[in-house]
Length: 454
Image (cartoon, rainbow, N blue to C red):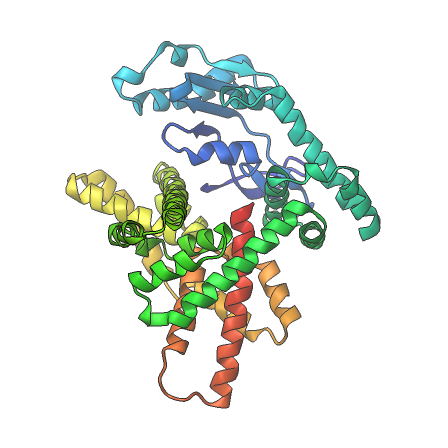
């Protein structure tokens, strides 16, 4: 979300915040998650210490479900005629972006809500999420509040034992989102407390132990791939997957070597199945193939979702009056997915000879070139290497969890593989560095797996 200047709702001093009024999920599917997760319109005031959401008019659009919803926070006291003035240009923009055959009557009759909660219920209702489900989410939040206010771990364990079945995938997902939000908003004490509680949950709940088991399988899979190094072939990858003792290992391998799971790989697997004379073993291999195909589909959908989110971010930048300033204010959001999306947009604009779009995109490119320096991954890796103990390493990782992404894993994996591929006998100093890089890679992989499970 491009940053804008606004005023603190508490002290009225100027601040910079991510202000977003239009959530058009038809053109930007990631906008829905930003709205519902509370990640939009969040700010922190350096003057008075305010942390929270900035009251902002909201317009929500979903063409697939004929939804055009509006919400104006009561505290803004915006008169009806002013509301219409604010909505008009945005609704026109929504309409202009739609092909004629998708411009239906709902666009002429937006639904207005007097509370944000009612708007959210309307959005979720269209997804089949009932008021009972919403209440269950509120109950999960209540449990998290109990865990945060409990005086010690014994009291927290007592909360867990009240009904351990509540600590499921949905609970851990919500807990992870709230922990990330606390870290993003600078609430370091709360974020640290939630990390400690998370470790307790991983040890004391059945689902937490499942996550821990998955993390261990991820580490084992990573070690297997590192040992093969540059000698990894589709045939050896096939052997690894066939020998995988459980589904967690299969899933871990599929996530790490997606590019190798191509047509040729599945052709080899099919040949292996057809050559198997034992009917029971053949059936097991067929089931394994079905699972791997499903894992590949999961990975592809995740990558596609990241790409769509990146495209939405770039489109939001391109809509700003001053693209250069907007890009400079959002350099921290340019990860590998955004760069990939930018390259795609440049290629498309060039093919279509869209000079207007090319000029706008080149403004973004110019800012990136001007700001180019050491890759963010390498800056973070230097911090990790500088950690003098395992506890210091854990602290650096905890403070920079938002920097742990696929690009960092690829970079670390490449460094480790390069070290292992060296033929010359390493010095004792090099051996120490190799061991440290392996510990770093393992620790980062562990955190990444936990994030993916949330």
